[in-house]
Image 1 (cartoon, rainbow, N blue to C red):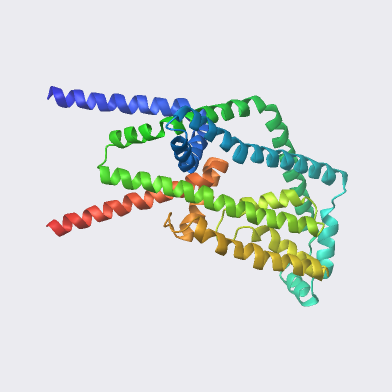
Image 2: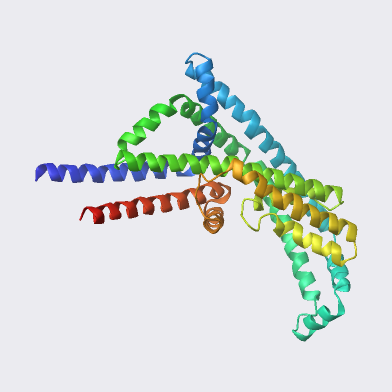
Length: 353
């Protein structure tokens, strides 16, 4: 009786200190999460460096961190800086009237075929003046919010540097001691070794597939879309390119949310060459990029249906921000894996009976 009471008290203490620890690190969960993601993603390279350096883990881990800085952090910082600058510039141009959305919508309204215009009028949708006002107001508010975020980012530079430092510091130790930490986690998780290995293998597969595959595809599609917008002389091509890259994380719809309405507008207002070029690039180049790159980069590692990826990605982005495009599918993969293991266990029990 005493042993059982002591065990329950110890489990309660374990739960309390675990909750307290997670509450303690919660303000920096993003830095910790991305340190783990980069460690999983670049671990094969770190292992290869360790072997070439004769088992010198400290030097290999330091070199791996430097590679992450030059391949991931510096390019992302440059893109983020350019994006903030272009977003702030777009806000100034909209405020000064250099970009007039009312003029664009007026051209669109004039280009609508008579039968479509009549249908809109019969359904009390023919008056687009209110729509023009709403779109102009939304564009101004969106660019204003972007400018405020840029100012906020500049004011929180110290906080960003602290988070970056924590991420790189933790990343070094994950590279150096990752194998030992992995063995310790497997030993302490209160599940059978078979279940633990399957869940950890699923975690590694989803992280690598999501980051390595989806990010590369998003960058390629965003770059193609941004360059096409720039070539066609469309305003804020970098901003739209980054937005297309971000939306490319969503399967099925993705970058078409941006380029399809623009192509339709260009065709309606009579710019058939630009509209046709954008339509061709969107359907043939951007559309086929996903079909060509996703199988070799992502493969079947996640084993998640497209609709689950879509729902979990949108939900993850809503809850966790930019971290959600990895955390959403990761939670969904754990959910499906856990219930699959539970179902297999129930079948084994039924077979034994």
